[in-house]
Length: 132
Image (cartoon, rainbow, N blue to C red; front, side, top):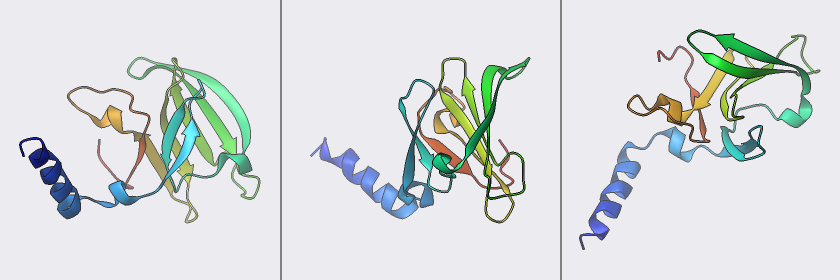
């Protein structure tokens, strides 16, 4: 019974307090090491996009990373989708323009852990206007 109680409490908590993040289907992507990364289903399908550029980004606060930009030939914009990787090849952030013309962003959920930021391999979409 002692082993079953935490499972029951977790199931009840997810049922009553679970949001759309737990029920949203995820899309499988990959990082630069070809390891599986889970993305929100609302991210664009990269097979329809054209890779434009890879840039090494260096910053005092952000450190070093790789920014990859993509174009959707079906839109008039030059850049429709970007990915940011750390130097180890972990996908940390994606950003895109949705069908309403609004920039969206998804970040690795492990980086949102204030006590111990880490790379989790699951990106979660942040609502527009979210303060970090």
